[in-house]
Length: 113
Image 1 (cartoon, helix red, strand yellow):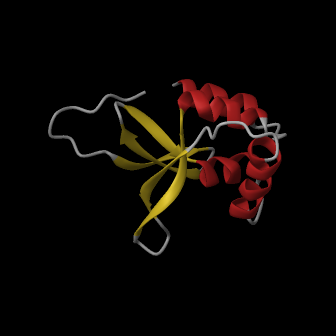
Image 2 (cartoon, one colour; image 1 turned 90 degrees about the horizontal axis):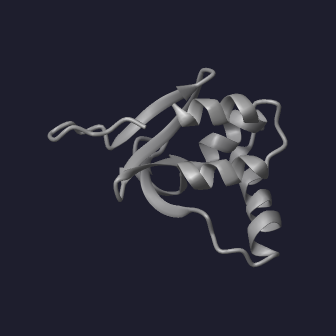
């Protein structure tokens, strides 16, 4: 991942995966990515927020796994900073396993870079 240089304010930044915007933020010395953006990029769902709600319920809540996400403020479409479910790289890889997608392997390679 990209390291931040002192004085470089890239803490909230958009990155692209196959022309899909993925919001990310620098938190506790690593990048955290928007879960909804990852879900949207992998699933091509018209409602990635609802898709994530179903995955969250099925994969984490019902079987009482510890959450793999944290809530961080990211810029929303309306320009306001809003609490957003985010995952670090390790948790993103775990999330990807929960979403059946032919884009999973390319996304893993993209994330590793």
